[in-house]
Image 1 (cartoon, one colour):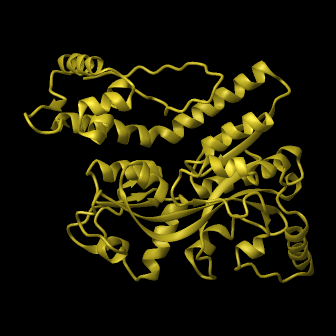
Image 2 (image 1 turned 30 degrees about the vertical axis):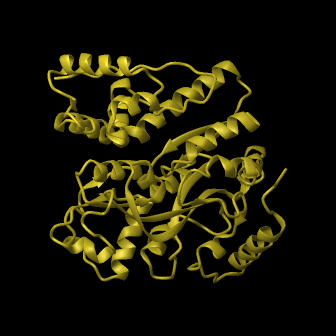
Image 3 (image 1 turned 120 degrees about the vertical axis):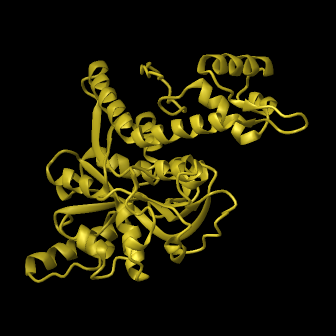
Length: 384
């Protein structure tokens, strides 16, 4: 049995590589993607001899072939090599939120150690591929340290209510009609006059399928087929809420879907499960599908919001964050993430406009609604 030993290093510059990177798996991923040892070496800026020698050392250490060599054919991973690569990818994507939470805690403590006057913005947020980039952008452009913890959307809003963070991040489908699962989940957690929403970004959600879509999956109806294996998200996540709402609208019973009770903790973990052949289809964001080389069938657009208490909206750190979200530099930083848009990023949105199920039965609540509408008009996102 192999044993894992973890460690960490310090860096003044943002780290582009994911946590828990390992040179062996970079090699395997490059060969899997290119079908050539020579092209893999070129992609990784390594010599052919170095790649060849490294592979042979690992094969000797692991006691099994990693690459299949056939005269006149492209190099490809052996069955063992593929299983090893996909096992590593699935394991990493499952622990990624917890690992990033740990890194955030350590960075926060080190930030105070180096500069006791540093400005820390605490955020508990639903996992998103753009948030680590926002963290670095805030540090570079405004010397703001984003203390970022990842949880499910419902847990994030509950954490804000308990006073555990300054901001919570959650996402919600554009289908927010009265009586929907969205209303039932969020109405009890968000209160007009108490909470304020800030636009972060829009995302495309849909079905992630294997390259070339070999099972010919076209719609939610295909999830009922006996030959289709689905991979789901955990209860309490905004994505789980969205897929359940879509199924309800189509009168598709969850029990009719093979794999509905098998869950992964993030979009990337779902994508890794599909890419590895563990499932035929999963539900998640387009950017995660693209990162794993999967096909994507769009089903809905959702909005990702930051939410804070009303009294926190004018705090200097929140004002600066809204300013940063409205900058073109930030928008350019996430241009390579498919399915994302930054329309109205940084703008304050009233709960009544964003969530149309609220009804105001008292003069106090009507006044709060009017205040929200006025704030929408007079507090646009700041731009410099």
